[in-house]
Amino acid sequence: QEEGSLRLYDEPLIMGACVSDENNDSNPDWKTQNSAPTKRKIYKLLLLGAGQSGKSTLCKHMQHLKGDGFTRAEKYDLIPIMRSNTVGYMQTLYTETINHADEKKNLQIPKELKNAFEEIERDEENLFKLSEDLAQKIAELWKCEAIQDTFKRRSEFQLDDSAEYFIEKAETLASSKYFPSEDDIIRNRVQTVGIIHTNVKFTVQDTEFEMIDVGGQQSERRKWGSAYSNISAVVFVCALSGYDSTILEDEKTNRLEESLELFATVVYNKELKDKPIILFLNKFDLFEQKIREERTPITVCPLCKDYTGSPDSTKESVRYIEKLFKGRVGKKRELFVHRTVAIDKRNVLKVFQSVKQSVLQEFLQEAGLIRI
Image 1 (cartoon, rainbow, N blue to C red):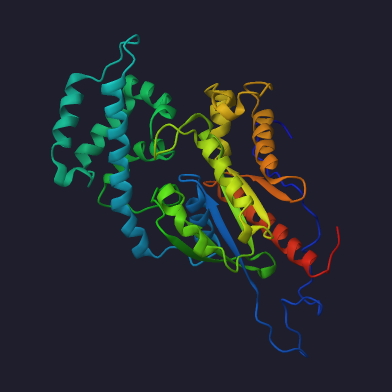
Image 2: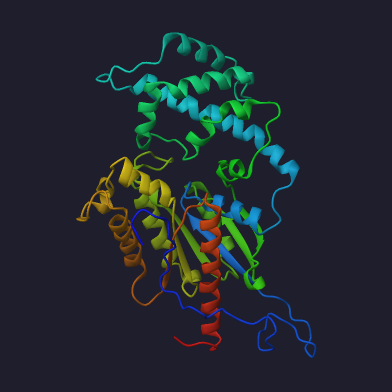
């Protein structure tokens, strides 16, 4: 497969381990005419990872596609959050442009537009409701060369990955007739606080999973331990695209470095030592964009300074990062690796179908039903 195309990467994967016939009496998940009903096993997946890794986005996708989905009332409740986030994204870009503009390029926001935006900002009571007038100003600001130049160096400050998506549809969001689309819900950023249980039923061979999402910010990690009991596997999510940016908490620590350090604590946790570990290298699309289009090599990350591959090769760069994670696991423990795009429905479905196979394989092995 050519470099640059999205693909699923599994390692290791035992093909056929989970294939079964619905009418096969030996299949414990199905009852026959002569057998008593069997309680279906629920496989619990614990999603761990640093803040803004994309864990909750993956959960939302599976809830929408394979779970109960979102009610109309729940979608309505998200509208104010989306509008507020959109205003916040532009405020961040505007402030960065005003305070840290590149003087050599002599790029400035037109005075008339600047004055109009700042006048609207002073109305704090209604600011984050995103009026149609404000939405129009946001659209005009987005077209400014100075704002676009600031956006290109977004790794230097904190800006959500979905900022561009929502800013570009600010005027749609401001409409009184607006109602969230599936993409809007998936891309919407709501910080996870505490522990969230999301029941998701996979249709492939009718296997049922319970996904447990926990907050990834440093202040939330002390709650992780309460979610360790009775889980079937750990899914650790790392945002590949964070290799050139810093974490929100201190704006100094590299995101990829923090993710690797956090991953190591999970691997060596005594309560999780016998659990399968599945690694999602998420935001592969943004990673690819930074490597190939923005020409930002992974060597900007201190942990990748020894990388000697091609600076604009996505394939070589991601393999190097995979090796860093494998080095934390060691040779005695298997690590199932997937490159994911949490906002891509087809990619997420394909990945979770493979996750199901990986998890079931481990349990069949433990039961002595298959051998490797």
